[in-house]
Length: 179
Image (tube, rainbow, N blue to C red; front, side, top):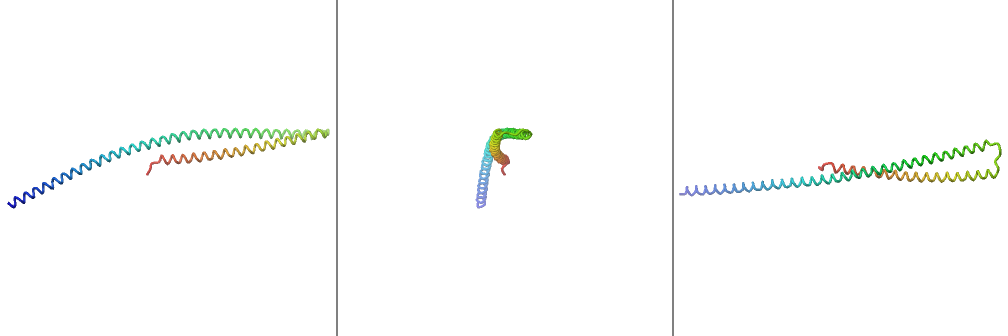
């Protein structure tokens, strides 16, 4: 009888252990299923975030491209203005040189004249010479002021090009994958 009792206790103990082991196994399977579902949901969320980031990067790239086009247009416009300023300055210089050549020609012509110049005529020539000197000084001042504005434009163009380089560096940083 003791043997039957011992066998019964061993049988029930084995059944209890087998049941507990089966329940624990089912619990582990359920947990693994939940973890797999959580990983899938996390992967989907990461994919959505990646799409959002890519859309933002595309938007930034479009804005940067628009900014590049705008800056290129401004730089071209500034270059055209500078070239026009140089053309005007060249024309002004040619005009001044022509006036100087004409004045030199007049002086040579007067020097070759055999008749003496009257005092009245000489005074008039001195006045004209003073007026031409004043006009030349005014032209020189205008030229200096234009040169100052030209230097200011060049500084502005340099600042814009530095900003453009900084923006290109930021774009490069945005395009590089994060580690």
